[in-house]
Amino acid sequence: MSRASSCAAGSCDEIVLFVLFVVKMNWEIAKDYADLSDRAASILLDAITADPKLVLGLPTGSTPVGMYDRVVKECKRSYRCFRDVAAFNLDEYVGIPRDHPGSYFTFMQQHLFSHVDIDAKNTFIPNGRAPDLKVECERYERILKNAGGLGLTFLGLGSNGHIAFNEPGTPFDSRTHVVALTDATRRANSAFFLDQPVPTHAITMGIATILESRAIVLLASGAKKREAIARLRSGDVSADFPASALWNHGNVRVLVDETAAASA
Ligand code: GLP
Image 1 (cartoon, protein in one colour):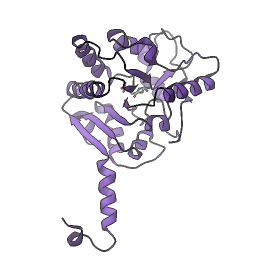
Image 2 (cartoon, rainbow, N blue to C red):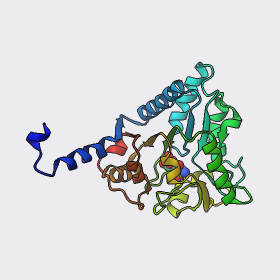
Image 3 (tube, helix red, strand yellow):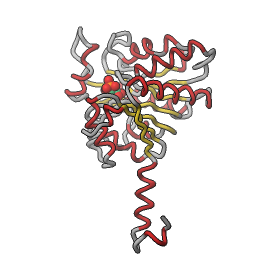
Image 4 (cartoon, rainbow, N blue to C red):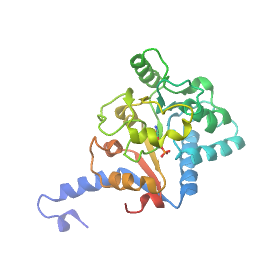
């Protein structure tokens, strides 16, 4: 279609803008969770091959577990996989010891760090037991900046649209901060807190911190994410739905399985 032949006066620029808006979020539908995990692991490993000193932003939750499993398997075969990589986790609960079974520190040791050749001094997770949490948030921002900022960040998706622990209503210009978790999020994360209530607060990278990552991959799997994926896909950008901030970024891949991508 040529501009001259297809555009009514005044409408062409809108069409061009609309196309640009749509194509900057790249959607990929995986057949199932196994396929999604394979693809996510390849994205991560290819990025390390391209830049061995990559700075990663890493998520927790059930969704990335398959990706980490595959990455660990691959890295057992390949020498020096993570040797010069730095990893910054997105978030951590406030007030629990780092070796608690529900902490994200424990999660990362179990699923990735203790199985690959990453240097422990290049792994960073907010300290939810710091005496002054505000100072801890500032420290986290500072060390991330000193590391050169995030190169590639993987995100999970909360059913309410949260990314990391940025709950609905979080301003898009937020930096690393302390957040009060919603009841729904606390319920969704209760499986690892059999001995005590799920913490009420967490430290999370802010939305602006995440959006500074040069590339972002959002992962979503299963029927529980269907509504959130449909809402993200609508393109409606609003603080009520934190993941919609990703529309303001120029390099996002959304990797969903068929179940999550089905109409809500
Ligand atoms: C927690 C994490 C998020 C994660 C979300 C989704 O709230 N803080 O970073 O994206 O869970 O978890 P799941 O992948 O288990 O659905």
